[in-house]
Image 1: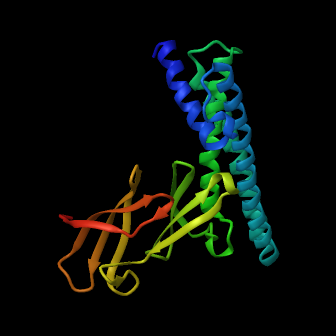
Image 2: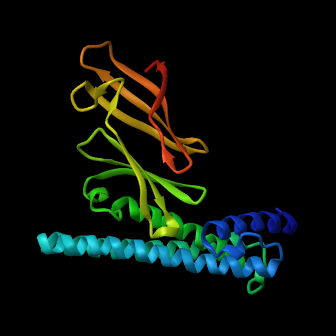
Length: 253
């Protein structure tokens, strides 16, 4: 990629980060030095959001420590070790995105800042899949086996699956509002039947976010049937709202 194309691509990325995270005056930047300042501000705000999410995670483990000191201590140590390793990964990965610019120049610094802002937001969203703002939305870390997140405009959508439950939880969070949960929906049934006792087995697979929402495959085994049914499904996400599950015709297993 030549330097001109690189600069154009960087500008779009910077503007996205600015619109999502920085102050209002950064939404319509057109001059390179303004973009540099706005991306730096975006990185700092993303760091603040990441720190807030990390502190909430530690606070949850501190609460666990009061109930079970040994487990709480182990979980806090695990969280600290994981966060240190992730920070090292981020700080060594982002310079790779700026290899086409000379170290020390504005473009080089801005490219790294933009990468760090993006990765920090993604990490904050991930940490919030482990613990959320509201007590009713807290996810037991020991039971999570699958989670993912994706930005939709000014909000972040996430899904969480836990061991021992066939249900899928989908939530919308406000990254600029302390990662407050704006909406939450739990999917535990299909075609009027509960996953708990209406099917021999029910499982969501192949999760993938797209522009219109969360796409996935629903695997079903009827209590009395001829084997597995696999349905291509989507959970639409529109205007910060989580819509009802929609599935197409059964595919051959």
